[in-house]
Each structure stands twice: as C-alpha cells, then as structure tokens.
Length: 182
Image (tube, rainbow, N blue to C red; front, side, top):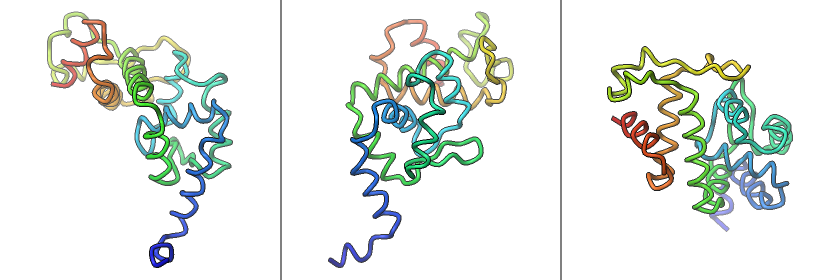
C-alpha cells in the first residue's frame, strides 16, 4: 500500500495506457513499434523518410499519430514525436518480438542509410573524412535536406548496430555500415 501511495499520477496513467496497448489497432501498434526503435522520441521528418520506402503502416504514420496523440500515448511536439512516458516506450519496445524488433532496426537503418549517398571514391575512407561531402539523396518530393546528414548517418548506424550484423546479408551494406562505425 505504501508503494501505491508513492506512485506519481503520471506513472498511474502510464500503467493504465500500457495495460491497454494490446487493444490498439494493428496499424497504430506498428507505428508505436517503429517509433520505439528510436527510443523515447523521433523527428517527424525521419518518419516521413521511412514512409517514402514503404516502411510505414498502410496510409503512412500521420493518420495514426493523431489518434495515438489523442489517447495520450504519444505527443507531437514541434517536429518531434515523443512517447508521453518512458514506461510506454519500454513496454512497446520490449513487447515487440525480438526477431521482429531486430528486423525493424535493420530495415530502418538500411532505409536511412540509403538516403545518403557516398561517391565510390569515398567508399574506403572513414566517415569523418568525408562527412562534409555527404548529401542526402533527393529521390522523393519530401524535404530530405531538412535532416542533418551527420545525424542521419548516426541514426542509420545505430539502428544497424541494434539489429546486429547477422541481419545484413549484403557484403556492401556490411562494409558501408562498418566504415560508418569507425
């Protein structure tokens, strides 16, 4: 009873939200699973990049984010999508089957890595030597250039590291991300 009295209201609300996560529609749950791979928050324009290559629920993220926001699960703050409580993010992340979660990390990393282009002659140089010469590829109509390339490379590499090397079967992709880790 003492433990219950010391809980903050926010913890109580978060616990209630966590207990209802399994009743969410599959598209909303998929949104949350993808967002949880980034931690407690993600830039909205990163989610837009993921939409471009089809790594989003049917209809994209936006229709589901508004409902999740209304339910108090996430907040849309400026250009960020933020879980309202770390317990919610943790439950979504840990509740995703490990193989699926690692595959999501891999897919996200490859997607974001593909949004940068390295000229062939930079291929064997460390990332810090060529970072000024990287650019975000412009294959879609989204505003890719709004994302700092250094951050994009860092996020992509972090996602691949979270997936683990066994999820990268392509040797060139392995070499690319290995060099970005240096």
